Amino acid sequence: MECHDAGATPPATLAEFTLGSGSTQDFYDVSLVDGYNLQMIVEVNGGSGNCVTTGCVDDLNRWCPTELRVDGGGGCRSACDAFGSPEYCCKGAFGTPETCRPTAYAQVFKATCPRSYSYAYDDATSTFTCAGADYIITFCPSILSNKNAKGLTKSTDGRVSGTLDGLFSNSSLYADLAVGRSNVVSRPCIKLELVKTLINNVKDLPV
Image 1 (cartoon, rainbow, N blue to C red):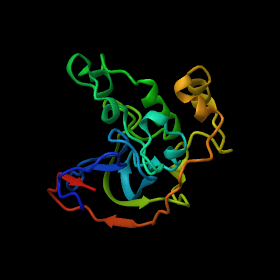
Image 2: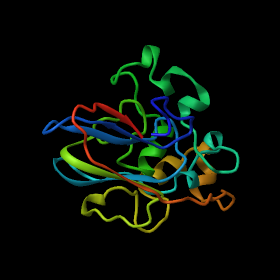
Image 3: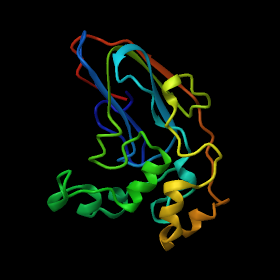
């Protein structure tokens, strides 16, 4: 709401909504397409449909590749923001879902935050729909209250594993991440909650 339709200055974790009215479905997601700066979840109160909790609860700054890292460790840029090339930005010859595929950088984002948008065409596993619901947006969540929160994290033991392990093991780009880093600065983070009741005829609400 602070952005007044102007978007956000990257890198920034974004909660995005297209709101219907009455029984019309809402579309919502948490996006890392503009990079990441803090954990965020969107939980659903009431409603019907695919009303699951989405967002990013892991600290992506811990796994951010060196070339995407903001000085001080307070954010992780997207590959598009860092390099600006069409294959990372899904533009030009790469401007369709068929030609723009997830890069290794997008896969790092996706493996850390499985339900968040990792690149422009990550719709299938990142956009959710619900009708007649209220939404709770929590910044820096410490406790997940929704039973549908399962699937928001990559692992339960805090170690780099699975997809991340495979990405890091054969790439010098991610060598420092494979063994973990202790020099990433952790910023203090304030938890806020926003509860919004749906308003008829509201179509787009930037958060």
